[in-house]
Amino acid sequence: MIRALLGDELWTQGLREYLRGQIYGTATWDQILSYWDTVADGLADLDGMTVTEVMEPYFRQMGYPVLKITMEDNTGGEGKKLTITTNRFLSAGNDKLVPPSSYGYKWHVPLVLMEGGQRRIHWLRNAGETTETYEVEL
Image (cartoon, rainbow, N blue to C red; front, side, top):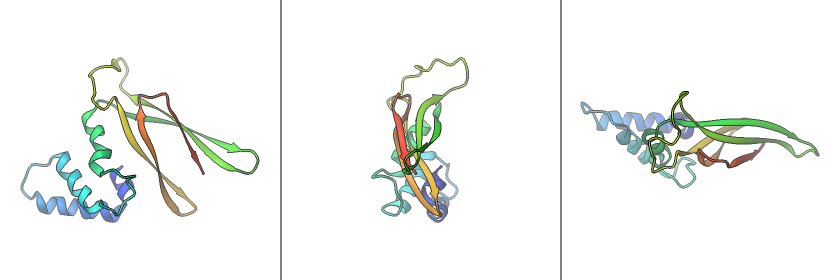
């Protein structure tokens, strides 16, 4: 997901700098995210967030966001629209309320779209355990 968000060049640059900076050290997720923060600063479409702010909930919460996407063909020549609902994925039989999360089991999900050779990111803010419906015009 980070590679799709940053693009190959910035992702590779951050990984190389991390490997050089942490040579012979113990790898941690927060350290590598900080290197991607540095290389992406002002160069990636992170909607005002850092890589760490986007990714930290993925490391600190149990489960992941699940997206249900339907495509509607708008009549009247307006094009197509994606309608997205989200939930939290857990294996069967788990209590969705345990353990408590300071993030509320919500994640910022970058929906990376390729349209006519152009790449754009549509952000689903606070996706996961929510009743919110997101809409994306194509």
